[in-house]
Image (cartoon, rainbow, N blue to C red; front, top):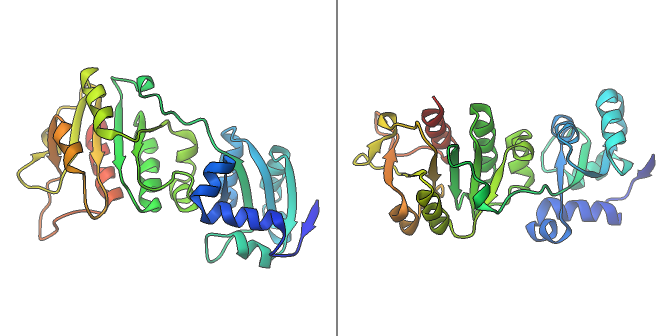
Length: 261
């Protein structure tokens, strides 16, 4: 295995750009993930691994897992701990990194299961919230998620928070969420706008026997007015005490639980 010792190596600089820049990810069709568990999840999920970077310590500590990754990767490099810190998105990395090919995620809204349950994330700005929502969606058996603007699903923080769920879960993209919701309503799906409004219908009183899409809005601004206006109904999470709203991923978890219970 060839060894890279310089932080200014071209391959390392490219890996760092993949970590930092959404434009680089989109133009190259590649993204970077780190951590032995997430990288192995990618390999087992048939994600195409272009490059493996691994430190000597990680090779000894995770020998079996590194063997799996070496077999899956097109090319592998040993890197120093200093170089690892250049491409890591964490303060204490495990010394395992993979550059992967982007997945064939879905933009064709016609492929949505109209009897399924989906959460639509509108303008979510925190990649950790996006990843956590995807992880919960997979755990609860949701049919998939719809992403409307907001952060990139290939952001390292989103991938890490999802713990591989964003690699496995059906993800649909739309640039026009109100239009998409209108199309899904025409197909018979129930569309809901989640709002922190005591006047809205409690989600605990809803009947989710058919297909449904529940929209979660931006962490600060919530759902846009135009999106809320095209939804069948506004729902809210009943809360006690003086709390007025919840973190986006926490709200998504509760709403998805109610949809799937």
